Amino acid sequence: MAQTQYGDISWERMIRAVEKIRDRLLRAVSALDKAGISYAVVGGHAVAAWVSRVDEAAVRNTRDVDLLIRRSDLDAVATALAAVGFIHRRAAGVTMFLDGPEAKAREAIHIVFAGEKVQPDYPLPTPDVLERERATSYPILALEALVRMKLTSFRDKDRMHLRDLLDVDLIDAAWPDRFPAALAARLQEILDDPEG
Image (cartoon, rainbow, N blue to C red; front, top):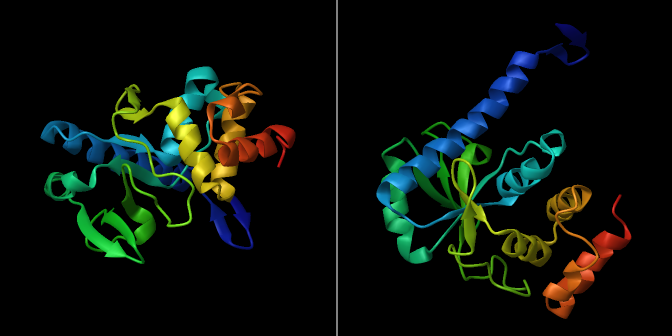
């Protein structure tokens, strides 16, 4: 094990951290599947699922677990997730399910509501949960809907995710025509500067 000024670098700890996130995701989606609730995995895990279809070596790890659900299903989602140890919280305008009573916000399932604007100034609402397709273990947002969502948010991590999709040729120069002008301009910015 290597030593640094910050202490030991432990591969085992890093691997365990990634495994905890994957376990959190799989427990949540299994509970929602068992309850028959429509949802889609969005965010970094959806991007990783798409990228892995082309090049597993290009997959980027993410600590976020983001699920798209319908607001009308929130009570059913809360019941299903409580059965596998998650605790419903709302903080700073974010609906989340903490992974146990001692968990931090970064150890949570973050909820995004389908058909609603995440922020009032966003140009478009989120997609519906039915704009999805099945990945190996869970449904992910369809690629065009995922790109639209990333272009709508357009934070640093969204731009990074768009570049990941561009890097494996899942999106290309023909894609801006699929979106309204404001989103097309954002995608063109990524296409023009793929290195960021």
